[in-house]
Amino acid sequence: MLRIKMNKWYCLLAPLFYFIYAYTTQIYEGAGFLDYLNVIVNYGVILVLSIWLMSKSVVETNLHFVILFVFVLYLFVLHSYVTYVNIAYYFTQEYVGNHYVSMQQINLSPFKTIHNYLFGSLVAPVTVIQTVGNLFLLSPLAFALLSLKILTNKVKVALTILLTTLFIETFQFFINFSTSGYMYSEGGIRAIDIDDVLLNTAGGVLGILVFNIYKKLISTPLDNKKTVTSA
Image 1 (cartoon, rainbow, N blue to C red):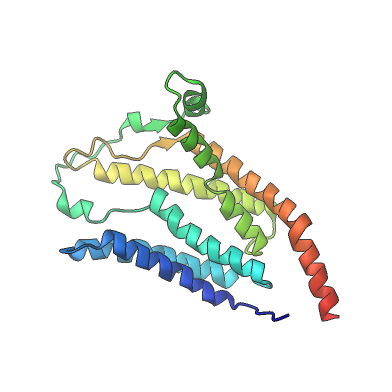
Image 2 (cartoon, helix red, strand yellow; image 1 turned 90 degrees about the vertical axis):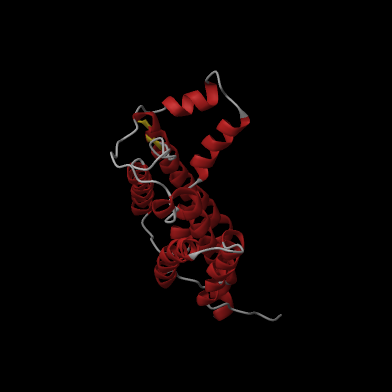
C-alpha cells in the first residue's frame, strides 16, 4: 500500500486558500488602497503567527498533517471573528475626538450574560448559539497545541487559553476605545464580557479532555503501529 508522508510546510496552502477567499470577498471592482491594506495587514499578522506555530509543531503522521492544516485555517477564521481590525474605518469616518469607555459594552459580573442568554426573558436561538460558540471558540486551539506537541504540559495549555481569551477581550476593549472618537461609533461594536473569558477557558479545558480521548483511542494505537512497522 502506497504511503505518502506530507511535509508540514505544505500546510502553508491553508493560508493561501484563505487569502484567495479573503481577496475575492473583500476586494471588489473599484477597491482602493485601504481595502488592499485591510487584507494585507490582517492576513499578514496571522500568517506570521501561523508560520511560528508551524515551526514548533511536530508532524509525524498524515493525521498530524491534517490537524495542522485545519489548525492553521482555524487561526485565520478565528482572527476574522474576534480580532479583525478594519483599518479603513480610521481613515474614512469622521473623527470627533473625545474617546470614552462605554460601560454598556462591558460586563464584569460573572455568569450574568450566560444566565440572560440561556435562562433570561430574551432567550432565542441566536443567544444559545452565541453561548455555545464562545464555549467551543478556543477548544481547537487547546487540542491542536497538545496533539501537535507545540505544548506538552496541559497546565501550560490551560494557562495559554486563559491568556489568549484575556488578550482577546483586552484587544476588543482597545478597539472600542479607539473607535469611540469617531462619529456614530456608539462606543464600539465589541462586547467585553467576563463570561466570555469563563466560557473560552472552559472550552480550552474541554479541548484538553478531547485530546485525552484522542490520544487514547487514536494517537496511541497509531504510534504503536508505527513502532511495530519500523521494527
